[in-house]
Length: 419
Image (cartoon, rainbow, N blue to C red; front, side, top):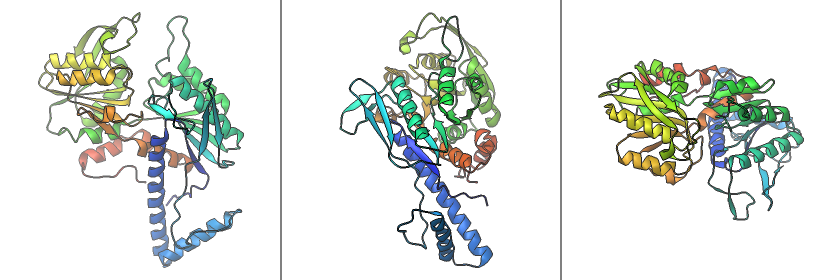
């Protein structure tokens, strides 16, 4: 059994990412606790030693290696590891940010978590005064945290950004900046060794990195696990629809794993227009390649901003005779007035459910809606961090077709990457 005691693994939450980070830490503690119990049980069985004695010997070896040992807890009990590293943040009156690591991280592998799309009020200074941070504010607090950790002597620094900033600025039209690549190069040059993200908008972004590795995770397992709560996949007349040409591969994955037909919406856009809300979408025409009449439609996309494109697509599918429309969004930004616009669309019958993830923070303004369902992906990020720390393969987590098939064949099972 492969097991590594995580004595040099640290997790840091940037302002706005506390809840997601705490969820990751909770999952890490459950995961390591479960692995520890299995190891103790196995050693006890193999060597014929009482489990408490096994715990005692493990704690004994740990304490020998601890050069700063002053006192220790019960020597015959499992000691839950600590992962979260506290950091003090300061926002100055002129808008500058400072990050200071409170505990030592020297020699540690540190993972810095940041939710750049959290635009809810945040108390940064701890004085009760809250600020709404922009993407740029979040990005710079991330820069400050990276530098503070590197200056503090960390062995390695990895960045966890479920929503990769500026991901839609990945290809140039005319004299435009490739800002998605710029962000990657900046943190790579700062000394970051790895970026962990979710359903990145374009795989091309990874090509801008030379030394820094990118791990692009997918929420497909969690989405399907949520989807089967609403429809009987085996019996329903389900069709998978790609909302545009850029989403074909994503929806092809769902169609292949669910063994369902794939259709696609083809859209013409006027790129001189900028979508500021759902009513000002830049789509000029829309056509469906396939048939949805009398069928249940499942449509997956990587992100929703103002939501105009998605709402128009759902309305069009209803007009073509779709019986139900269910959408899955890996990164539910819901910027501007999007939540109210989706609320209106739901009341008009354009769709039945939206499945989102907790990769982007929201409160009951969204979670309280009848049409919205949250799929948690914190466990996925926790297992990726654990495997990276133990230098194990990520293949079962990134190419998750096998575990999806296990789920579909045994819907009641709670097995999820337990190994």
